[in-house]
Image 1 (cartoon, rainbow, N blue to C red):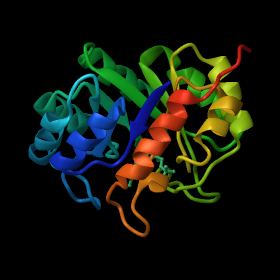
Image 2 (image 1 turned 180 degrees about the vertical axis):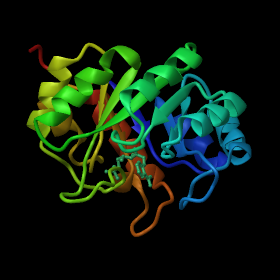
Image 3 (image 1 turned 90 degrees about the vertical axis):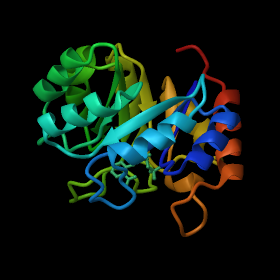
Image 4 (image 1 turned 120 degrees about the vertical axis):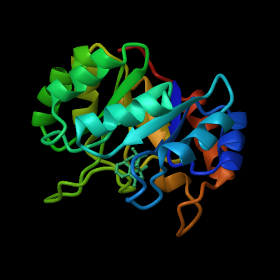
Length: 223
Ligand SMILES: O=C(O)c1ccccc1NCC(=O)[C@H](O)[C@H](O)COP(=O)(O)O
């Protein structure tokens, strides 16, 4: 079971989270205009503090393919996580990014809104190394970092419908990650809000440790 954490925005936290054993240590990367979004120069410092076998995951929320490619080329992260709205950064763009950087692992966020999410996930399946299933607020285009769960039955169907590894995200933390894993049977899990310090965006290392241990101990029974 892979464990992934967002957002790690300084070298000290990156090093501490790696020591806990988190597999994917994530931060937003771009032009720095979004809250807590790192520039490539800032991301380089955080990425250098992530120690093996943990890997740095660079999340791009920008939807402009050429800008994303320029940032990937400059940073060369082990994992590129594409988080823009699926109507703006389309599956063809995702395929071109993977084609341009074949040696970099590509993860695509998929909003879990309803049955249509199964088709969206299937469309992306053969072009990416991971899918990440995330929550959306009803009536809102924005998805990600909402701290809420979604309909896990749909996520379970996606896990069964695609062949690439799927990470489950959305409102996961130490107290519900085992139940989520048992229900959805993903290859990995992601957490942001529920492993943050109360009322802030810094990581609570005790929550990160408990989330990680609960996920690694979770039992996935055969289908
Ligand atoms: O961190 C953000 O601001 C963010 C914004 C939009 C998409 C993703 C974002 N963060 C990274 C993630 O992918 C989150 O870890 C994921 O959405 C789960 O968040 P949470 O429900 O808070 O655990």
